[in-house]
Length: 214
Length: 214
DNA sequence: GCAAATTTGTGATTGTTTTCACAAAGGGCG
DNA sequence: CGCCCTTTGTGAAAACAATCACAAATTTGC
Image (cartoon, each protein chain N blue to C red):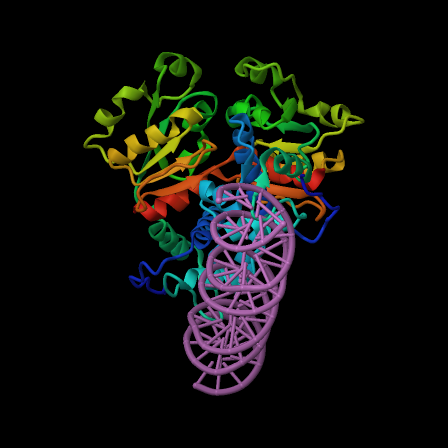
């Protein structure tokens, strides 16, 4: 008999906790496919290199999902995590900048596998981009950004434009109502505080490795 | 009169410090292009959203680079940071898995701009990959991995293979002597502790944003 | 060449995150 | 059905990270 959720909400959950929830959720997805019924915090932690207490504390941020002496019901916990992470509905994503990197992102299978819906791409040279991309995601001229977003709700904008454009594009997507940005451009952007921004800085990761091999 | 480096080494520097050094280094690169001679810790911090004390503490891990009452000589500090980060020589990178994402990575301009040298790509279907990629980086069959690496020193391996292959590929590059891995595949890998691994998990970033927009 | 103004480098402090450790809860086996 | 074993949930402790605050060093301007 699965335990209840509880509407525990908004107590400034650290970003690191959210990322780990996401990892837990993925492990649970695998377990469910393997028809595993239950898992303990120790087991879940071991698969990701985390302490069992950390797993329990992370989950405790959102309620009590476990059964003492037993562990967690895989399917039940997964359902709860998906709901917490906002993945119990389709999350709508757009991409701006369908260049080299953007082309890969727009058809990246990992996104769709995790239940994200890539709606449209936007590019300054849409013809060239369309040729480059092998996917059914339509690519529009970046001028159509506002008119396309208008009305349709877009959850997340992924940015992969040239560095010189990044601030102006960020402002445009924010003005169009987008509340979350995933930025692949190695430059800070200034946005209102309620807009969530994540940076993925590929060169930075390489540089941090470079330190250890020198 | 620029201060000295000092051979300060190995006191378990947190990864987060290294990443910030990398960010500092990039700002300094820009400043140098603008012919700015000096910068204060407060100024450097402001550009990245960090506290000035943090900037100074980070730098203090590796020596005394500043001049009290003056600040830091841009060119001098940059040189020191590049040396600390192991960027004062060419860092040699290979890519394994030249699929959708790998194709973008192999010719990603951000890497070369930061001074990394993409040596070769390796693929199970090298012909298809070669057609897909518009860059001069040669692409070999993944069977040639060991023979190519042999002798030639490779600093970092970037992995973008299918999830099912990841552990076996990781073991092969480690066996071939690679000491650092940048893994784009959303799966943990088991490697000897002296091998540095960084994970870039694109779907994870989207999921953490999804939490905030739900 | 001296005094005022800066800005560094760093010990002390505060805040955050992780780990420990254990009481309480529940399952499972005899 | 009852006892033992496992595992949760969580306060307390430890480890880690960021910020404060100030003495010491140096520049700048007069």
